[in-house]
Length: 161
Image (spheres, rainbow, N blue to C red):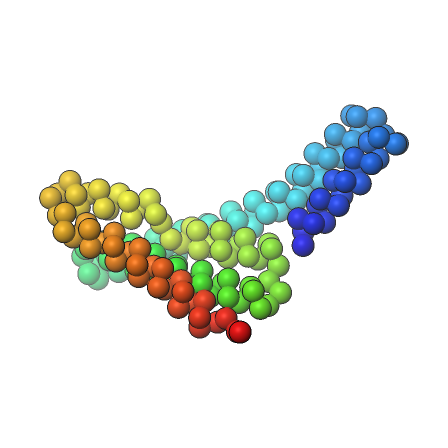
């Protein structure tokens, strides 16, 4: 919705440029509109990432402390939970009128900050470097397959057809 609004304003500005204003006025107006549109989106994503990253740190640390840090279970659990939650977010946003700002906040920001592919990749490399090839293969395979299933399950649980 906001993207369509933004594109309409952009077309209007281009019309004004050719009929009313000089190039400097139009460029200034264009920059203000772009800044407003993208800054709001960036702030929503940033706020969500901040919260999601803190939740990931706390939850992953709690799980690793309980089961042992070398088990990689904290990152695995966080990523699977995140996959399930993103399925729910998109199922709910398909049927409810979730604004684009909130979708960016939750899906890109909160869940993007919550899940962590970089930690998953690093832990896999450490397993390989430590000669734990079987565990590394199991970790990668389980993460991908269970992650996809969790996303699909989240969609199924909250999608109405």
